[in-house]
Image (cartoon, rainbow, N blue to C red; front, side):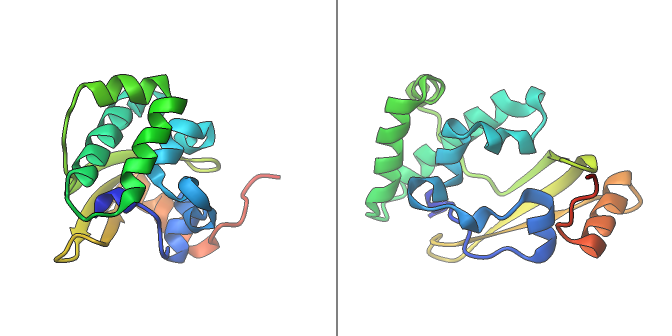
Length: 159
């Protein structure tokens, strides 16, 4: 179920681009939860994209909750977010439901700046796990930045 967005593994380039998303514990393992409770989570995306991401996160969490897996964590995340995040509570009331299969987004890397990627989400048959594949369009500045990140890893470029 997509509601379980808890990274099990990341390749080195994903870690260099997004930071180590596998280090979180408890409810913070959920990207949905972190989006609405941890301001650092939003630093990865341009501020002008935050409203779109917020709305999509709430809609995808609703889709995960209604997927019928019986996993109580999605309901626990919803309950916690309704308590802790007025933004989430408002978006939850919209009752939007969405699944993500492909998306274009801009990632803000702390040293390299904006990197535009296309993201494709692949699901296992039972939708219990997803694989997110991010690529930059060939010949773009973003592709060059990803190539640089793949060469240097997650080393800090500035002191």
